[in-house]
Image (tube, rainbow, N blue to C red; front, side, top):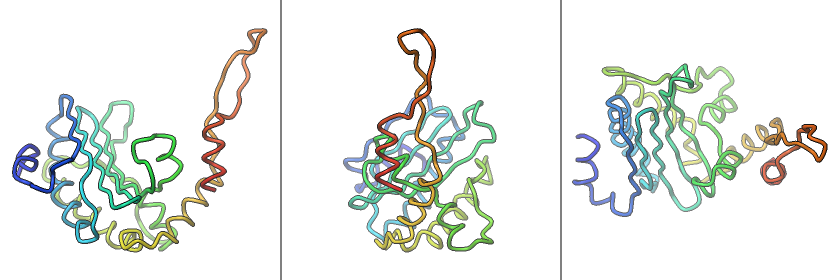
Length: 198
């Protein structure tokens, strides 16, 4: 089933935000496979598709259940080499960058706290015949390491989020003073988010 057929035939796709902008063949294949494999793996937990963005170099697919969300992001943008994709677990507003950046974690970060020997990180972006096997592995990792999050137990999610945010620096703003000398200050919004989620 291709990308457009999914939305034409799937009654569950009503109310889903779909945005495309010159989607590349590889991002379309990637998004089709995520919709099929990840979607079916997490729908049993009550997550439903909310947003799909497919462009030339990126894909972003969001599934939600109440305040929780799962976001699958990929990039093949030339400056983002090596090309990869991630599964992100979050709570709250998935559309507000500052909120989602501080109130979410990558699946691999959760996995490494559960199994220090886990061989998991960002996934290499797959091409052609490797797409299905890569997404199957990522879906399996999501079910294995994200099971508590999927089931509604956010204890491990909160612990990992806190640890990560305690180690992060707030965003920096570089601006001139009245004499034209530049100084660097912490961005007040990210300071607030760091306090809230650390």
